[in-house]
Image (tube, rainbow over all chains, first blue to last red; front, side):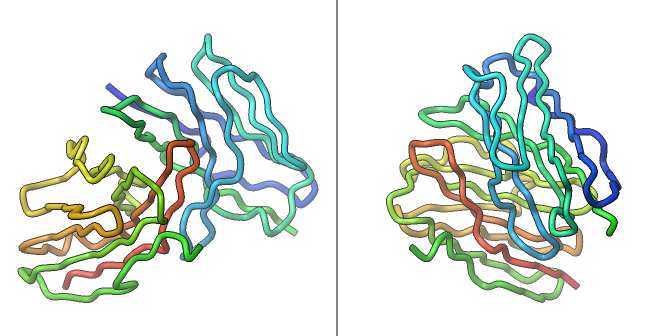
Length: 114
Length: 112
């Protein structure tokens, strides 16, 4: 069935180090992969996304890579800062009737230690 | 733009009572999604609409849950009767024809 697996579930890094979160998806027709950041008590907010015709995308300290053959994609955060501490969710698009739905991973709780 | 609006922001009710959650999507967005978030199950898609028509309600946990979208600017999620295991944060999200999906602030529901 439709599934997105996300690892690790928790991740602690020292401030300034890099963090990597990995996701795999099951539907080979998925063609859009957003990443959301959720701070404690707040709503998920889009931080970066990638489409299936692109292998990598960067936005300042964050980047996402996509391997369609292996059906996995990753979020990379460099030079981590305490404000990067949050829960991060990956998602993959699934075609519905006239639109898409997103299947979310189970989330990664990132802690950046000062 | 005010973004996706949800009400109430917090709801505390007793088991067996009816609960109605409300959502106003971003103007011009044609797809609307209801999610439930818990520590145990993460972010679950309950139901979604396209152009006010329900497309997929396979995530609705039981017949006690129902959702409507009578027009492009309003949707409701109803739980009747409510149970303690329904306690969660319920998010509404909307999206236009581009892929970016915006979440509302959520409704924190506690069923005693």
